[in-house]
Each structure stands twice: as C-alpha cells, then as structure tokens.
Amino acid sequence: QVQLVESGGGLVQAGGSLRLSCAASGRTFSSYVMGWSRQAPGKEREVVASITRNGSTTYYADSVKGRFTISRDNAKNTVYLQMNSLNVEDTAVYFCVASRGLWIAPDPATYDYWGQGTQVTVSS
Image (cartoon, rainbow, N blue to C red; front, side, top):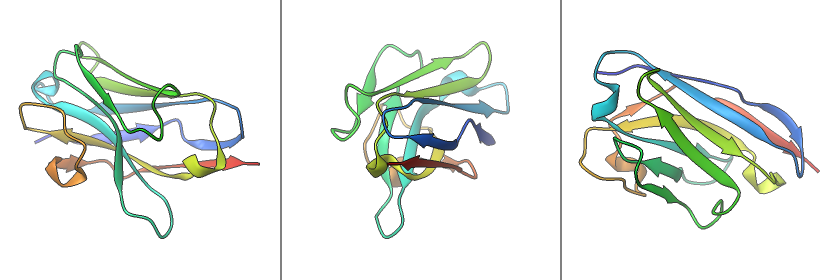
C-alpha cells in the first residue's frame, strides 16, 4: 500500500504557473504507475497526466498537452506536475494517483490509490 500527500496548490492568475508535488510513502514507489487527476465542480474526474514506473513514457490529456509536464524522482519517492500557461478551466482539485497496473492509463478508475487532493484556483 502507498500513501500519497500532495502539495503546491494555490491561487494563481491566468497565464501563471504552479508546480505540484506528491510525496509517497513506502519503499515500492518505483513499482507504481503514477498520475495526476483533477476534478472541477460539476465535472467528472479526469486524468490529466500519467507516467510509467521508470519515467520513460508519459500521457497527457488533450486539455493540458503542451502546458503541463509530469515527472518523477524514484529516489525521492516523489512525482511532480509542472503547470504552465494556466487558465480558468484548470481550476480544480488535483489528486495524486498511483496504479499497480503495468501501463499508463487515462481512466481514473484504473488507479488504486489517491491522495487527499490540493486545490488549484486560476483567476482571470
């Protein structure tokens, strides 16, 4: 089992940047596919980014492609989400997620562990 703790959310103006971090407990962090999911009010959860166990392959939702970058540091048990060119549509609670599966996936239901979430608010 892994516990996930997000940090780095906050309020930012449109066009700005934020970097989210997720610290994972346990000694098997490198065995998990990691990702970031978000949920805006009245909308379904969506996986915005995911990264394979060794960090060699990434996935991005079309809505964030070219603006967000996911990365991981297995030595530090940490996954990051760099968010640039933020817009008001990016306002949501962002969750760090982990999967015991073998490959990255865009479906939130495939992730086994979820952090408590961190709020990102983008003002116009």
